[in-house]
Amino acid sequence: MTSNAKDRMLNFVSSAYGVAIRPDRFDDYLEAWDEWFDAIIDDAEAALTEVSPVIADALEHSDHLQTTMPGTALERILVPVVLLDAAGTVLALNSAATNLFSKEGLDGHRILSARTPILDAQSNSRHDVFRIGGGSQQRSFLAIETSVKAAVAAAYPAAQKALYLSLMDWSPTFAGELADRFNLTEAELRVARGLFEGRTAQEISGDVDRSLPTIRSHIKSLLQKTGTKRQVELVQFLSLLRQVLDVVPTAEDTQGGAGFEQIELNGPTGTLQVVRYGRGRPLLYFTTSSCPEETEGFRAALVTQGFAVTAPVRPGFRKSSLAGDDASDEMLDAWLDMLLAVSGPNPLVVGHREGGIIAARAVERLAARGETVAGLALLSTGAPVTALTQFDNTPASIRRSFVGAHVATPALRLGYQAARRLFHAGAVGQDHIIRFFHKDSPADRARLSDLAFYETTRDLLTFCFENTDQIVRDVALWGSDWSTTLKAARDAAPVLFVHGTAHVFHPIKDISALADTQGNLRLLALPDAGQMAIYEQPQAVAEALGAMT
Image 1 (cartoon, rainbow, N blue to C red):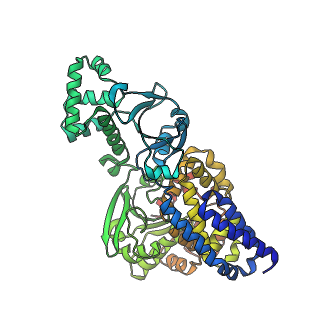
Image 2: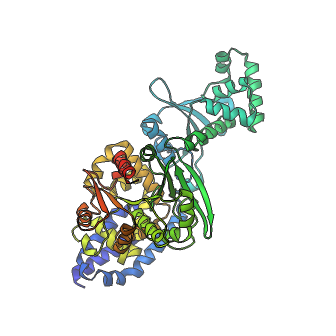
Image 3: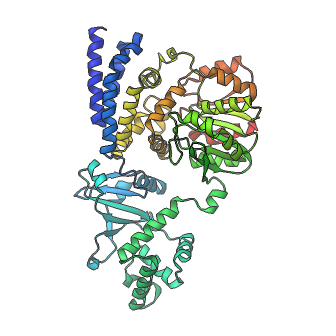
């Protein structure tokens, strides 16, 4: 090894320990890796083997810190929560809070700067309750201010208070739910609504034209029926119940248009959670480390085309059990028969990104057993990688990911560990990682100013960071030679590649070459679309899938 390569190796080793301890050194680590990798590219496997004990040690440190420094503690709080410092400045929002403000099209940091108390100072409550926003131009939110949980405080030492948020909108569905659950009278519902929307007992008295003692009697009855002891607890309870009803799909959501339901299949290796939506022709949909329900726009496009979609949550994510090491193989080995039974016969099999390879494997296995499928669609999957030299002229991050997944798994795992910890460290770290994952894709990077596109990226990363080890396996799969599987699949059913012309990770020219030389294989090129093509042009993708069946 040359002295230059040794110097770069020492820098890489130093950066590995640095990023294991401090995820904000994420960029330094990747830059050191790229510089060293360029110096040892001719014998990368041997050089990486030499430093693998060091990387494994750094990875062990990172694993330990991941469990002892709960940077994800804020994300484990399912309701919207905001952290404040001693001066009341916003430090961080969890994903639920970010989603809530984004859904309403509001600037969370700005709207949180003005909080109006909505309980009397004499309430002697351990919690403060505020109204945020409101007025003719924006929605109102309820904010319960509490102390910071110890696990969250460990990750955010400057945090002094936590605000738990919910929309203060009152709907007939919510009123009906309260009445049914707690046997509330119409008068009690009117009082509950007033408290929920931040009015005092005196204000409610004037609103409903009843005496103050009568209103207080109704409040006492509400406390008894809901099992709460104080008015602030009642308001907090109503707030949390409203939030739960807002995020759990109702019967109309799961049976109509683009809503979805989740079911659980019990099989030989545990539980497989499955997302289902739509009615009509069966479509079996595979993702890798990504949300199987996808975005509302993509779901709506598939439903409009008359598809009944069945999408498994891969083992190791959410409630799906992971018995082995590789979620892809386990899902096909243990669950393919059950998935086929749920989706229905002769499905269109579809896969997104690396999920396209899993979909192709499913078609290969079904064909070997004499089962028929309507076709195979590969969305942004790319052509099989027949040699790692295909990545020689790609951007550094792409070469690092694909080559690293094959010959430097611990190093790539360490990078994803750091990315996850940085992503969960707060809004600034989250934004850094979102932009990092698009930095080498000009088409996708240009779209980050689109709030919906930005939120989609964030949601996908939130999901995939549940299992960083599996991401590394998925990247290795995406950079593998699966041409034999593709041949078996196209011998059994028509194959459609859907690919953006600006896709950087897998150039469209490789797929075009396949389509020109192989039968039973077509390509739909989406102009100017990058890695996130199905979110940019969902209707075009759905129409192409509809045409296959």
